[in-house]
Amino acid sequence: MKILAIESSCDETAAAVIENGTKILSNVVVSQVDIFAAYGGVIPEVAARSHLEAILPVVHKALDDAGLTKDEIDSIAVTHTPGLMGSLLIGTLTARMLAILWGKPLYATHHLKSHIYANWLGDGLVPEFPLLALVVSGGHTQIIYMSEHNQFEIIGTTRDDAVGECFDKVAKILGLPYPGGPSIAKCAEKGDIRKYKLPHPKVDGLDFSFSGLKTAVLRAVQNELGLPITTPSYELKENLSEQQKADFAASFQETACEILLEKVARALEERPEVKSIVLAGGVSANQVLKEKAQDGRFGGVKVFIPELKWTGDNAAMVGAAAYFEVVSGVKETDPYSLSIAPRTDIA
Image 1 (cartoon, rainbow, N blue to C red):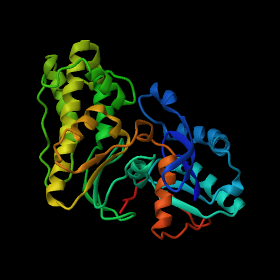
Image 2 (spheres, rainbow, N blue to C red):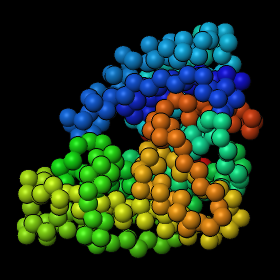
Image 3 (tube, rainbow, N blue to C red):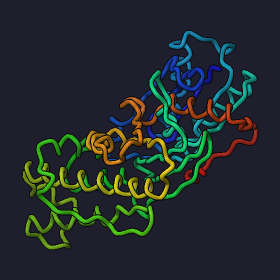
């Protein structure tokens, strides 16, 4: 089965052709990260206009790169939730139009589900069920239990900020460029992870909280500089040395990664039948997180991490998720009634 997949949930316009859920025939991504670097974050209206300009050329290139015509495509998949409303609208309208004009089945796919299924892309080993998925991105931080394909149970989630959002906010405090994840990781290479002791929020169960960690970094920076807590965060970067920035970045990154994996370990204790752990989402690209997840702390449970190119938003993962919806018996989406939503649960 060959699926043309479209992704436009935030600031990447992407299309891909996936065969049987694992084989990538083409993958095209047009990123807007350079546009928003100057603003320190995504501007939804600008993102939507950029998608509108890029979406059809990206789809055509995906078909050309795969060496296929529309007649050789079996189905169309598209991210329909969660994400930015304007961005989602461009992708879903395009997918609906193509499904109607070409007479192809349409599958509207959840964005977080797609990130999880990035672990099935390629020719290597694939995760075994039951599994735990740690979904970590700029908008989500969740632990999801999967007993089989297309069966999802959220057993832990953030009560405030997502971990990726926390990375962005700490980067802004330190005067590092957007996006915060790669900037902090690079800066932290020259830092001391033990220089500043940061708290691990005490949250019951398997839930997370990162708002307090962000505030703890802010207070630690103010204290290090001998400035009152009324000092605006945007003024602090001018007073920090490069070594101080590196030490704060390293200490924060270490703490954030440990918080995430401590909760996964606790989830594993509660679900001893789990055979695999998968990382998913943009923050799964973090090298420290990957190394810690594979340091043996989970015993004999196999840890799966997507290739770096599949950790960010892309359409290949959407195609993979849609394929496993098809084989799981999920009904196709009526293109005339497809709606979008900014945030909905995966389960």
